[in-house]
Length: 166
Image (cartoon, rainbow, N blue to C red; front, side, top):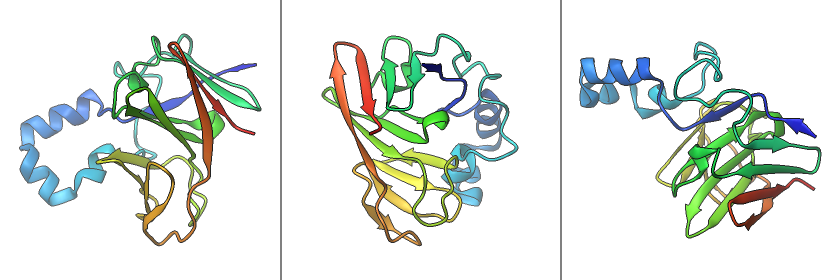
């Protein structure tokens, strides 16, 4: 069993939040677009180094060859409706749809196989490599991707979510 060493979630870093506050959120978003502030680019700090990200140990996500197990009491990004996580070690996107319902999809984009550059908002996953957009079931909303993302079965038992990778 492998303990997850790296995850990315849908929260902004404190430096980016400060920038938005200082420059005016509307002006900055109009100029750059929302994806600029939430994308996972190579100049982002290491996910384990920021105060908004859980430490590498004790984050509540465990990855094996056949499953991703999430302790929702520890993985706070997934504990509430609309929360999502990119589990890099398993190449899986997980989103809390509310009412104890979760969706899990491959994070490997069907357009160019990017697997780390994702944003989520308004129930849409966007691969920021080339702009393909997918709904929470993995269906393509806008290309260039033409194939859906693979989905995985999920099972919630009390506060433990299991994503079946087989």
